[in-house]
Figure (cartoon, rainbow, N blue to C red):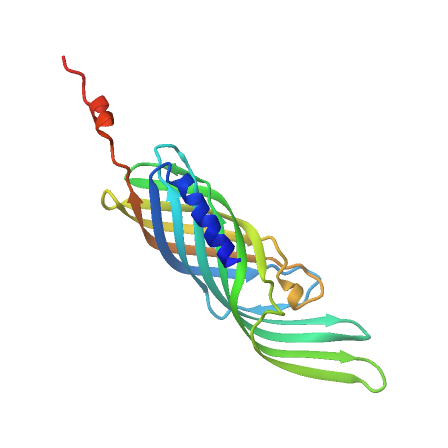
Length: 240
């Protein structure tokens, strides 16, 4: 998955180079949570905020509409307790997660302003699980004679208890302040809504989604195109 994203990024570079190209890097913190349908009993504990690092490639043309793509690395840590089953048997989960995800964002932007720019975008993203840690217990039981009750202690990765693929929407807004002809300081906030089910790994039903609101601060470098000699002459005032 990661190699495919890399080759997709390289293939899109000529398209972005048709206008001024901007490379940006930023990092920040986020607040995330899982939706909880009324008929589920999962209890979540969010011990730490998420943190992220991003690399972006964006157009900066004279047009209001500009394309943008971004690769983001995010780490989250949380705990969940949940019970599933009925009269014949069930499971009781008590898990602590640390998950690292890599996301590819597509961000068609609307940009306003000159030295101080304001931009907004209705983004979408695809994500993959790249690293994870899971500790906790899975207690499962079956009624009968005799009663079967077994508790598994888990300590390892979360590959069997967390989705490997994510898809969602990620609208965002930001400010970009030019401090020189090439360098800018950026501030950006984004709201991610995961459209794939997360909680199916610790409850039979529920289809919980993950929400994430983050704020990022970073820097950007704009590669400005050189004005050709013919263009410069055409821009000179006509002689009287």
